[in-house]
Image (cartoon, rainbow, N blue to C red; front, side):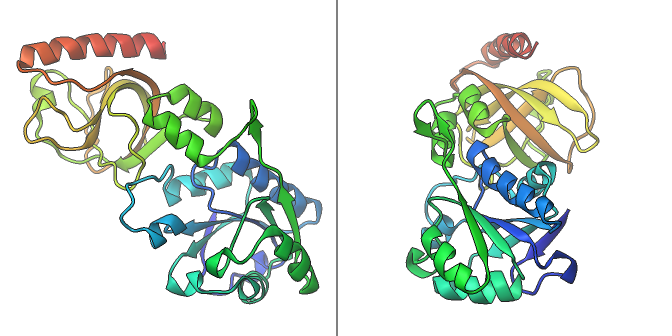
Length: 307
């Protein structure tokens, strides 16, 4: 899939396309409806389909000190957009210039002139431009006067509640992996490069693949039943500690999956770890034997849940 930056005109082959416009962090069931509308519209008219996103997230730009909250990396979104059927991914660099661009200039100078869009699809609550001055109504009226067609997709409801990234974050923060997966339409997955640790796991029979949480939302700290997705396509079952490892000193925040019946070197490899079930909160053990005994129980429970 082609990944486009927002700083230059896009290739001629992708001009005249239909753009699904939003942040799409998580690419949950509601986001998927917006993307599906754009892709279907583009296909019906023989046009290219493009899904746009913003990086950094506007919230991170305006409030740089907020705790980590991301649900997906750009690489994960690119894969999700490709699987949805889009031809290209457009990444808006959310910077001071973009934040100060008026809604009218966003339509004229960016969507029409720079990206050559024939149509745009958004959610009904989408806002854009300086001080959020643009709305779906402005897109429909002013956009049409400039030759840009637009469609707005209604929110996707779930038992009377609108599906949102906020709902998913709340589910993960209370350890409800199944609810998060239902709203996302897939398990929540953390992608990262396996790094060297203190190697304690190897000495007690539980070698782990240590991953920094980076900009991801912090789900509830604790022990999880997980699957690991390797670059070569293999999927491994395992158990993971997500948190600060209170039994070890000094505390260090990591995602530490242990994969069952697996003993290959993963250092330096980019893997994804999917959280399937929350098993228990983190706990501190004064003796190593007690920690190992609990890990034995956790792995047995994880195998049962993943069977």
